[in-house]
Length: 183
Ligand code: S3P
Image (cartoon, rainbow, N blue to C red; front, side):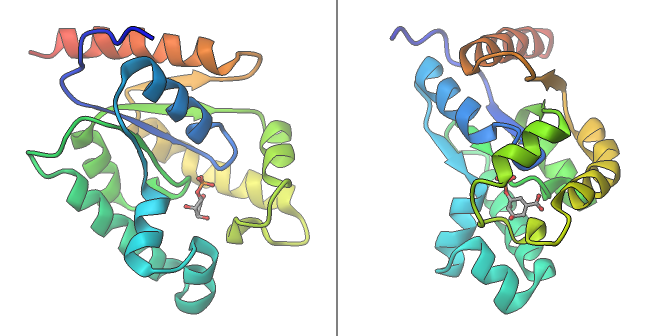
């Protein structure tokens, strides 16, 4: 695989659980030759336990503290360029929205509720969806978070009907336009 010209900053993927951040991130990693990092994994390393254990032992607000701490670390000026995949709720804090913007080109991946429901039903790793009525929870969280994703993203991509290659190619093109317009 040929690696094109490097981009001046990171590509940051945001969006709801099950919208394909990891899959698209891996595709971009392959196309650009940059490392991909996943903020949830960095949090797990920091805490020494999986995300759902952090939620059950310390609660969501402690998890959000760790999320912000990791984001701060990534904004260090000498940090290498990366593809950064985030957890779906990272936009809940205003401070995080600002930090995400500083990190680079922020892409909001979207998918229909049915697709989110189907993808997230496959595993039990998402504490916020362990409820009697996951569809209702997804819809409520989407209502709450949509303005935050909108505010944070430079680009919104509806992934419905597209494969990972198509989505990643579109993101790369838009990222180049974005960075070219910003000296
Ligand atoms: C969360 C999404 C999860 C993870 C945690 C909370 C959320 O990440 O950060 O379970 O609040 O939407 P994914 O979006 O990668 O599933």
